[in-house]
Amino acid sequence: MNKKPSQKKRYSKFLPYGLSLVCTLLIFGLHMSENMDSMLNENNNRISNGFLTSQIKYHKEFGPFARRPFTTWLIETTSETFGMKLGVAFVPVNFFLLFLSGILIYFLSICLKQNKQQGLFNMLCYFLTFSILFAFFPPVFSYDEPLQYCFILLSLLSFVQKKWVFYLVFFSLALVTRETTVLLLPALLIFLPGLKMASKKWFTLNRLRLSALIVLPVVFYGAFIAIYLWKHQLIGATKTEMISRYSCFLENFENTKNTVESLVSFFVSLGVPLYFAFLFLKGKDKNNFHQKFVYAFLLTVLINSPIVFVSSFARESRLFALPLFFLWPMVSQLFGKDLKILSSLKTYTQLLMKWKYLLPFLILNFLTYWFCFRYYQKLGLGENTYFAEYLFLSIFIITTHFLWSLSNRRQHS
Image: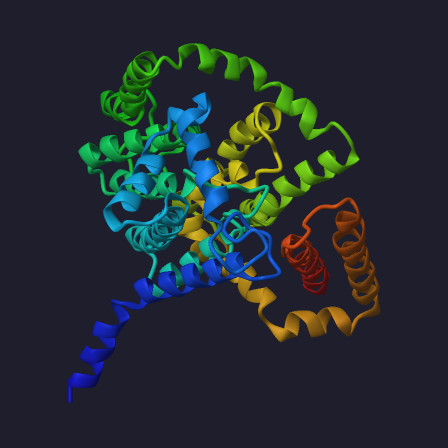
């Protein structure tokens, strides 16, 4: 009698792994589609070993990337161990790390007191994020990010569970993988998302000790990078690179095409999360535990986004994604009700049945269609990709939810 429930329970343990695997394979399939132009296939259905090999060598030899050795080392080790071509080894390494990061999102969600269904939903939202779904498309050009994401998620798991030795190790490794990880620290220090503190006072002995623990990985990273740059004679190259970084700002807004590409890159990465974050803060159903994650997200957006626009190529959308670590494991709890509205047929019938909202709904969608599939593509952006479709869907989600909220508010006023 008890066999069936126990079998279901046993199978449910494998659901996170199964969903993460399916999502990873679908993303791989998207990158390998014949009509897509990704880093992996260069307009054909075979792995583009030549191009990927050149990228690996570039990351190994060019100063700014050479100081991030872990991903390159993993690829080279995989190539040597399994007798793969160097460029081909790029694929299993990075897609395995994507698979692993999805599972870590699930376990972090569970650790933050969400049920299994919510954890799976959060994982799905993670894989549907622009910089994950199109991770290896130009101009996203992911390289170190899958490994960085795994280390960050492991450090956040350790942070929430107060396993400080593991936190120190994983956050330090995340910093070495990509130094931009440091931009998460202000939000961790100020809001302590996921932690319950006995006292809200800032200058207690416990709070000061905790703050010291949180920032300690920066000391380890500083020691590592100083030794690494000196040993590999990269100090001069690093100085030159830091000075030249500010030219990126001029290129980001050099002309109409670059300006549109930069702003769209920001929007597809953070537009929908920002909309729902502000909506959440305006709502009544919020508590301090949830608010911490939203405030941590917003603070990191304020810190990270200007840095990307000023010192990096803003078209590389993955650079804007860093603040999402505070939302990915909490999507269901924070925005579940609002996202459910979008999946309800009643939402659309409510808009279509009233002229007051039907006309704006149609006009906004027409303008969105024109921008995404006419103007955006006319500029030569998003060719041989589904970027325009993703952009359209992002704007559609915001406009639909906004109009529904407006009509619902007036009904109850």
